[in-house]
Amino acid sequence: MSKQGTLYSFFSSFNNAYSAKRYVFTVFYSRIVFLLLKELYKQGLIDCFYLNPVKPYEVIVFPRYVAGKPVFKKIISISKPGRRMYTKLIILGTG
Image (tube, rainbow, N blue to C red; front, side, top):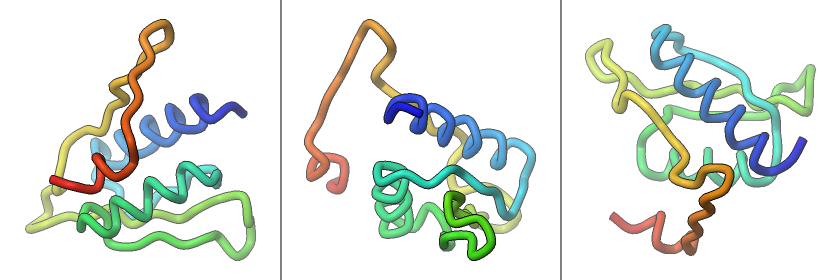
């Protein structure tokens, strides 16, 4: 699977988990997904994540809820097929 396909799959799984109010979900492991999860954890947007010991190609993610409500509603990609947008990772970490 391409990097872009992996990210879109991650965004879809993430959004579906939040809309269904699931407290745990899995995504396929890739380096970019791992880095994104690490940043979401540092920002306090997910409780934790770890590699599935039974299926090492999967990552188990625990989204964060406050008083039963998700900390945010949706995650999207600003880059679309045919309209690529790039930014440095340092810019994403500031805010």
